[in-house]
Length: 264
Ligand SMILES: [Mg+2]
Image (cartoon, rainbow, N blue to C red; front, side, top):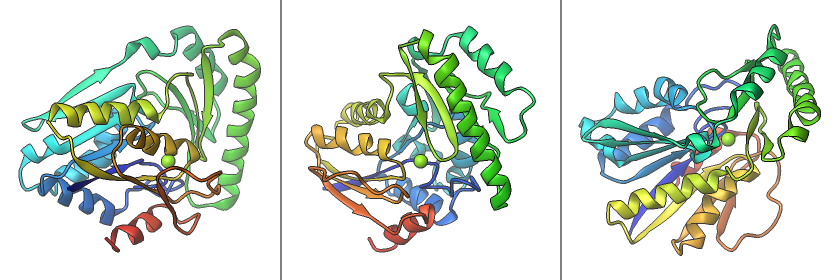
């Protein structure tokens, strides 16, 4: 039975504050694809961001461009997906969960002029406001404070009139999205993708750094596939899960993922 890998991006392939991909993990993914093993990226990131920062790196290590056909990309937590057919990208956007323009405008106005946080212009469905990032602890502290203030503002000014929306906060961003959107959607679509490839027998290893990433593993488990969830986040896991979970040293993110991959 083949084992297929599922990666969140921020805090798993990258250090969340530096936002730079880990070269070992990129090579690992390229190797999987070169060996014709399926890999999924399941992230809240935009397709544009992944294309520029991750996909180019993976692509440069492929023996054959057709090996991209083994990659499934789920962006914006499943509402935007990308697959490849003979190495050519095919994207799908679920516009039914796009944040209305008037709300986007209101948020942009609120963010305008702020130096610590920015509005991600590349998202096609959800709205994400993100910290600039970096290495200076004092600056990072200021950025996180600005993000928390923004979260309060959204709670007071956006959510009361839009009960269909919710906030999903990560260490580096505040996402405003439809309530039904979660990484469950991302994993469901990955399983559909595999079904279309006639894959009925496989086990999975998924990596995440935030509690909502467990949704990735839950859907795989519910569909009766063996799954191991490798957790590298800071907040401890809340409970026991019916599938195998492995927590590695908290707060080391991509380094912890690299360490784990070297053991298998
Ligand atoms: Mg993450």
